Image: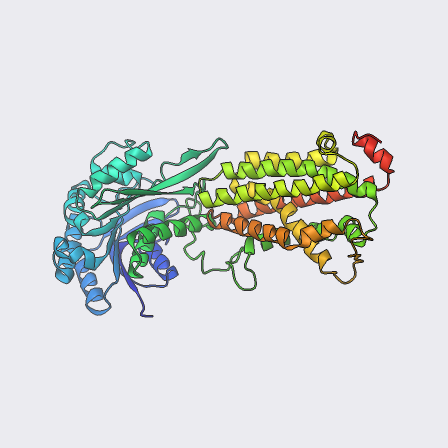
Length: 536
């Protein structure tokens, strides 16, 4: 493969979170070769911009010519351009290299324009007299312009705060497109919108086709963190890198949006103010590795590893071992199967809540499939109980035990209060753990007594169901859904720890659930039946 090159024309950030420095990091992270033209030098850190000094327009033009005459550029990105004469110097250099914008020059240049006007800290980065030149001379060169909401309002001459809804974003983007730009990618990070009734917020980014007028939108979870310095520069450089690789504009901006979201989630503190994003999050050592041949399910592996010995105690519990051996007391099995029936009802409700918490139809469909599988599983429990003379109505009337209530209410509470990932994680130990146990016991693991004769072991059917093809397929689908949910919602290291604590708590409650079955085995069958409210 030939090396793709991206030229960034922007200001220098001495704090290295934005500007030329952020651009070059981003370009490198996208496996392109970055070249640079510096338009201004800033004295800048995480607390703000203290001073700005421009580079002469002649020197800016000389830098552009030097790079393009020798190295060339598969795409170009502009950022802070300092002043009117600098903008005109850039336009003259583009015309010299590519011809007129309207006569094919724009298509050849593949210019991504980040209309840097004001820093996040409020420092003016583009004089008012230069804005007209930006609108009339440089915008027609842009394949994509990537304003945030304040920049879009400024470029259209709208009052600050005019954009309050997604429809306002569409109108503003359409007005920007009339100024000659081919595509408008209007970023919604300054206007997080509520999602559902659990306090979650999302960011809506809008891409408008300047020729057809058609708009598409992408929604990502809003991360309320302070390390967002340089996100505009970073996104525009990522879009330019995508175009350099030959991606369509739609794919380039979508991938860039995902890259920036993950960079924000993976950021770490730098300085005393608004720190930078983590430009090399995909290249640096990760607390959560990318899927690979050794670990195709890294999120699941992380959760299990983070639960410590709780997972080992759970999947090697004496109760399922006694079922495999056929030595479990009937009283223990009856208590378990009846309480598990009630647990599964709440489990189904939790997965229904998970479906409610997403607008991604594939993720919603995955939750619905889990509910369908749970219904099948509860019917297995009904058949077991009927074998022992317990009717469906009697099973339904059995009250939930205190242990079961503690577990099911935790699952429902986390699912109701949390987001989609919370609902997935809190239900994962049950799904995955039963799969581990079933597979382990069905394969007659050394050191565990297994009686696989169904005539001698009345519980062997239970082992066969959970170790068999149907349930193992459910586990595989559930893990894939868990991994996909995380992939579509990048999280910070702190959030990963929070999810691990939820997973561990649910695992401990699973252990308590099986402990209760063992305790029930110490009673007589009549005592168990009376306790469960069943006729003796």
